[in-house]
Length: 164
Image 1 (cartoon, helix red, strand yellow):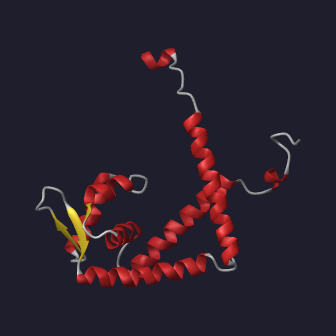
Image 2: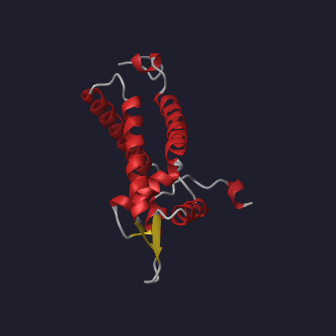
Image 3: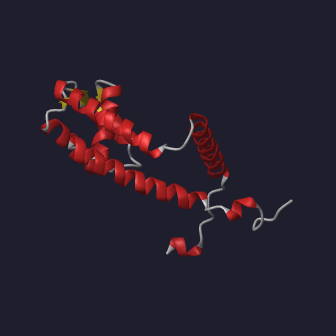
């Protein structure tokens, strides 16, 4: 049995460092490329894509699902951008704002989707389909393991300083 400081995992770059680096680089590249080619940012693309995949989706639903990516103010500003560009129609007639793509929005979505497909090709260059599936499976397993570990943590015991 190897100790915590021994073994092959310690000869490799830490997974957190790689994931953070990939996330930052990918976010920057996707945002810049989408802006340059399609006139929209990464967050605009994610909302546009969600509205495409779920026509009539409640705006609140997207906002709640996207909390890791944007706060409510940012979300509202992006929806305002998309509606003022004529790409998304916001219908609030039923007391809940529902979003759908317009014809121009569908065209913008299709162009941006092509840009995203090119980005995926660039990022996965040199990886076989099996390599990619193996990486995704490994990351999904690590995420599930970590979420399970978090769920099993006991709540922290309040310290006397917390009551001051």
